[in-house]
Length: 212
Image (cartoon, rainbow, N blue to C red; front, top):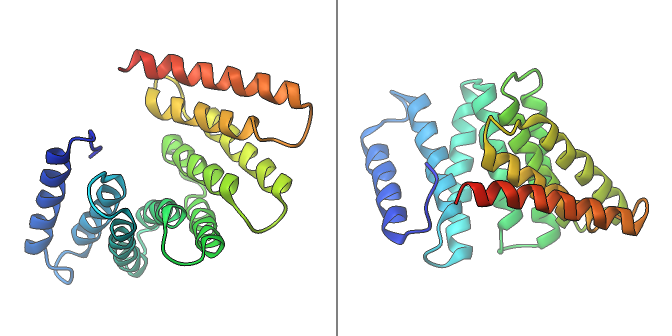
């Protein structure tokens, strides 16, 4: 479920999932329970209301619980999904050391891609690559230029994977992320990188405008 930014929509969605969670026992139906926990974590990440730092901590708790159950059940694709969501949550985390949180985010996203090796759902893989590119773009540890090159490769991979007719908005997100990396890129001609970034942003904007 994607939130619309409407506070009532946010509250209704979270209330519905939390109500469902109260009647699902983790021991009797761990698959459904872990899916609910994962979805609650995602919804919390998308929330616009409340203390952002505290909301992220609640999202992390939900996602970690989902990941634990999915690991125990050897649900590889589902575990990869939750690792991808954890990667996004740790990147947004305000509590704790920023560099350490980004390293955890990177480890989660690398783990998600490893677990998804051989996955045929290219949209699923593309979305993880978008998250990975964003984390690498913000990364503090390591060499700045090397991080951007890894981010560039991941963003380009996302663009290659996500087809325009498959998920237009996800494709636009991939194009936008590629632009974000290209305009910061240290390798190659500065002018050429900026021109490439402008082209990526235009492609993203064209799609966004079509869907508004």
